[in-house]
Image (tube, rainbow, N blue to C red; front, top):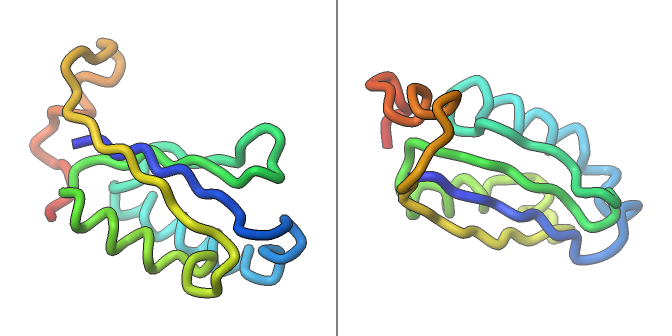
Amino acid sequence: MVHVMVVSYTGSEEDAAPFVPGHVAYLERHHADGVFLVSGQTVPSSQGGVIVAYGVDRETIERISAEDPFVVNGVATYSITTIEPGRVHPALAELLTTSTAPKE
């Protein structure tokens, strides 16, 4: 499964600023474990960010999103859309079908 995680600030970017180091560590941890494929700020950045995740079920991705320091500290929320890929670009096909996908 692929999850599109939209991070939205509940206040201003300045409200979130004190929690950026913890959020970056959170992103790095989940990129390193192979769950997060892509992450980045929206344009404009004042809206929040987007993460594309895969290899875990919906319950797990909801738990992971709840652990984000932005969420823990009440400065952001997540909207999660889960898809079962039907068509995949060849450049991503091997990645999304690999047997080394993260464990749930």
